[in-house]
Length: 195
Image 1: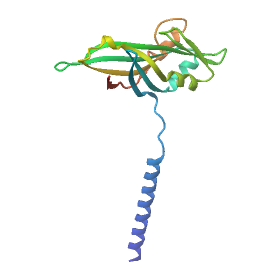
Image 2 (image 1 turned 90 degrees about the horizontal axis):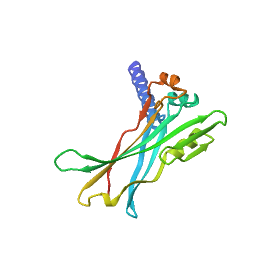
Image 3 (image 1 turned 90 degrees about the vertical axis):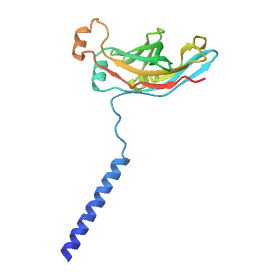
Image 4 (image 1 turned 180 degrees about the vertical axis):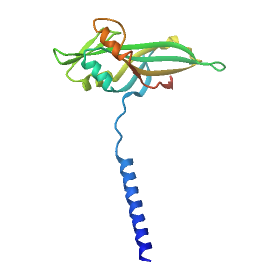
C-alpha cells in the first residue's frame, strides 16, 4: 500500500513540476524574430490629399548587420499599392508608390547615414537603433490626390517593407556577390481606404 502511495505522490509532483514549467514558458517573452513588420498603418484625408502613417519594426539579422558593418549599403523600400475593388473580376492595381532609402555605416565617423532617395534628404545617426527608429516612423506620407479617386468605387491600400543588400554594381560589387541578392520582406498589410 505504501509503495502505491509513493508512486501516486511521485506522479503528483511530476505533474506539478510540468505544470510550473509550462506556465513559465507561457509567461516568458519570446525573442524577437529577424524580419520586418508593418503595424499601425492608417490613412487620412487632409486638404484633398490622402496621407499614410505607419510604423515599421526593423529586426535585422546577422547577415544584414555584417553587410552594414562591412560598408555595404542596405536598400530599404516602403512599397505602397492602391487597388480599386471590382465586383466581378479581381482587384485592379490603381496606383503604386515606392518610398526608397539607403542606410550605410560610415567607418571613419562611426555614424549611420540614412538617405531618402525620393527627396534627396540625408541624416546622420550615432547608433543603428536610432537610425532604424527614425526610418520606422512613417508620418504624413502623401499617397494620392482625392480628386483622382471615383467616389462610387471602393479602394484598398497595401503596404510592405523590404530590405535588400544588393542592388547595383560599384566598387563593392565583388564583395556583394557573397550576399547573393539577400533580402527580407514584411508581409503585406491591407485595409480599406475610408472616407
